[in-house]
Image (tube, one colour):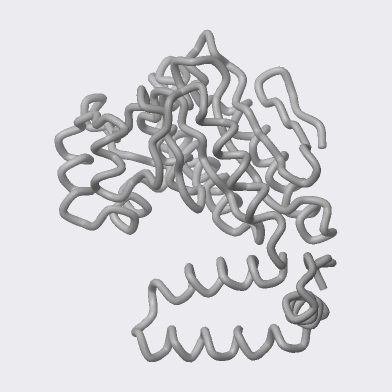
Length: 264
């Protein structure tokens, strides 16, 4: 997989580490970065389907920011039509992250504001450095979150907390983000990326078909009544017994050896 000047991609034995690389601009999102992310995520989806990618870690270059937000200078003179297309492109990236059949983990190493918070929210879960800051401050600019923040934030932390963050435009630290369920784990800055990659590698060793199905059922079931969600789980569970990975996983367990999953 190829990156660009503003987007670095490292393939570490099937764990893709994608780094937004605009540290002088605090990794702010502009059209070039968004287009680059879309391209990388399309390639990641193809690699996942082919069994070449098992997990993805998303982070930002430098020590100050994951992504400090969208590029306000580029947004200031947008028309309604241009703003609509900009928002749609941001949503497309978020949807591409969320729909990957492999786990996606945001390693938030500083500011994750506006579009940065939304990008992290599109990942399956978030690890944060102790100095990380989160927020949806768009109302301070006379707009609202446009890359999924009003919806993904509410689903992650609950409607009341999301309303407070989006309406007041407050910034919260990593400890508060963990307390309200926005962040899964808070780590010293130096340990953030190694710990995130270690978790990605751990998941990458599991049965990839089962991981993909677990992710699919968790997301699909979240919006269903419990009885329907449980029925979805039953069918997914049963369907996995027609896979080579299920047979290998259980044979390895009974044989007291490490499984060799093929993703089939």
